[in-house]
Length: 71
Image 1 (cartoon, rainbow, N blue to C red):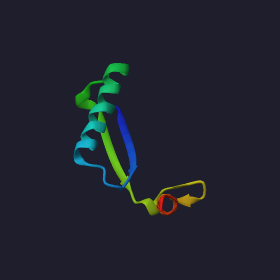
Image 2 (spheres, helix red, strand yellow):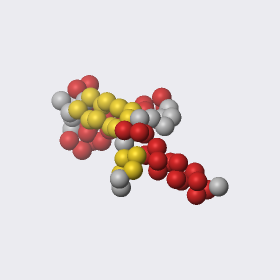
Image 3 (tube, helix red, strand yellow):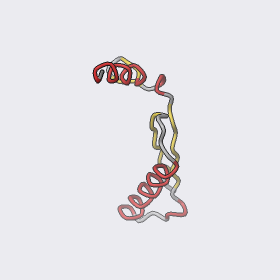
Image 4 (cartoon, one colour):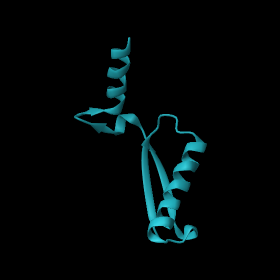
């Protein structure tokens, strides 16, 4: 009974994109490990960009810096 947790930032992932992620993760487990798709659980957790960081800064700050470079 596989459990897959996919964490993404809460930056507008659509319902269709989430369905694609769920289907893709399920298919990967079915095709690679021969798991029963009915017993394969996929959870998508959306994380606020203030609560996700890398390199010592939050994603919110990363995005702010990226926008400033484009201008």
